[in-house]
Image (cartoon, rainbow, N blue to C red):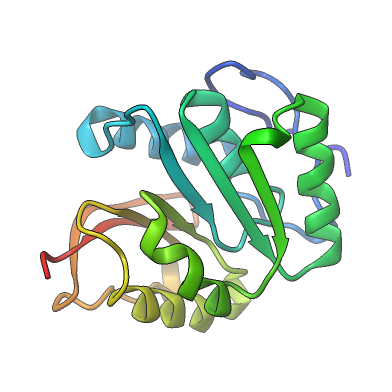
Length: 188
């Protein structure tokens, strides 16, 4: 599906991204604001950065990381065949597949493998399935490493606060309908 969604910065700036049918992508303006916050001292990308785009959809978040951060490697997980096809097409058009892995995997199940090895995790389930995001945030709380950044996007009007006993909230921002919690796990 042709869209107005595009990469906002980095090596592939301005390139258009395809969307799977029925997708509700994070809008360009919200992604610009989100990455501005990350780049203003929340993340310090070194030689390598492992990113997990848990409910990948079009792959826009992970692809933005690949465009911006030369040392980024991204795992994209989704259970929608249309989403997986779209992510693969978007990666192929940019010729950056060697730094990406696309998996047909449920995020809750994939957490056992990817939460502990990720430096940056993006959680953005469909707004109609907000309980999935809350379940994933609860599940990864016990396995992420110190310093791992987790971004949880929710539908603003029905957003659920992260567990304050587990997470430090670095930023809590609303952009249109979207509400972003940028957080880190308390020191264990």
